[in-house]
Image 1 (cartoon, rainbow, N blue to C red):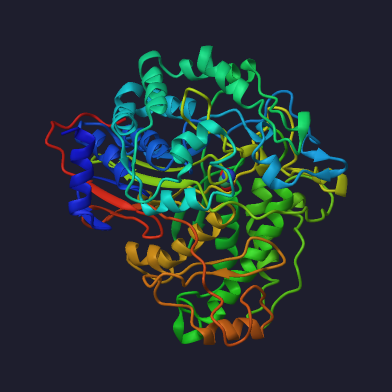
Image 2: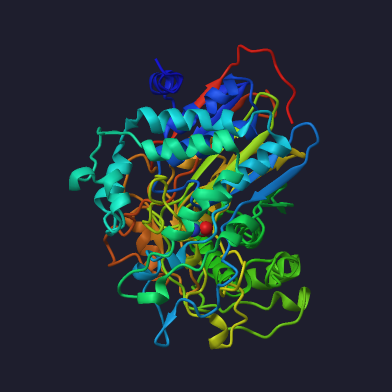
Length: 599
Ligand code: GLY
């Protein structure tokens, strides 16, 4: 029996969503990806090695969400030195990109067309990012970590209900290109749950990278195939929709190793993703504002799911998202006032706008500039709804090294373009930029397109520390709602003192713009305790929007998919929990091999 199948079976028979261990623990949104990580731990690998294997396996079993055609952020904490790093393998705009490239006849191109044309494809970073992490901190080779994914692609796996649902409700994306349709709709029939999916081209590609190294992706025939594939355009856009990526763009791509963003909340330390993601900054801003309220205190009307708690969360989200829209972009291209946005005085001034008894008028971005650098008072640029896809996985190894990784090809199915003969999807990450340059509306254009720039992300891999020691790693997919899924889980852990699995199961609430349209969960029975209709009515009475008519249940959504590991400081045990919103799986590994040194 193939070893990946052995691990899959182990996973399915053990399949607890919660497992305790002093050893290695992996958590991923698909059991086969968790199995790939577990296998590497079993073979003596560390957290970075396991994360690499999970990333490649997810490309095979959850191809609609992430892969080698996309990009990722990996937070790595090293037990031996106590250091934390970020590997930023975010896609970049090609050198020939321009601020107005998504503008046609004076208007922003429609997202469905722009995002499925080659113009949306950013220079992929995942392969260089994984390779960078392995070279710095791994103990396994790229080939070792690709092995489980190659087996899965070559021998196949059973399509789960989430992949089947994404094929069925694909916005046409698996149907636009014959190469994509041939994989996911063989003979014109969409794959259904339980079907067996073999991806020979993808296996060949992964084997090529395993044999020849990461350069095989960024140079030579594979690079040429990527450049050709992204020259595809939608007929609605004509020549304007053709991608601008060249072989030089691919050859020049480098992953960046960054310092994490560091913040504090009620005595806990949080390390998150700096720009080009808005994830870390926006979560830390919201926590800073919410620290002024005793969210866990039911005696004062707060506590999980109370109208007062939800109201102040909504208001903090509205304020932070107003800032995010204006101030955050790729810090390597535009100046982001990071210190100003996290300045205690600035956060105080923002939090002072939150009243527990009334809803504020639509807030504008603040002016953190005075605390960082000078700039004008900006308008809010237009925003678009973001895709619920992307994926998050977490791992802690037996030495206590931790990796927390969020990875994406942007929209579900990315651009929908499969590189012919190579079997992987290309991202549409460049539509995470402002499609209409915000500078045209007098804004500073922090997230406008420019050459070699990275589009602003919402991805928010997190690490939580107590007394200088890592205690939890988590993150989520979900476009802009990522930020709020991560916030909800953080509050559940710290303020509401929930065990990890409950913190993940509990219903989430999200607002992703200053106008404040509320989205909340309640679709699945495990989302407990529910936000009742009485609670929703109290919010409606305060003027909160998005919940529908009084007396009805407006909490019908499902958002995010949080995969987490925790380290119990008292016992030293490692635990994991995974999200039932997808097929989350946790595997605990008690290695039989002699320990090898961690990174
Ligand atoms: N494309 C999803 C994100 O980066 O936030």
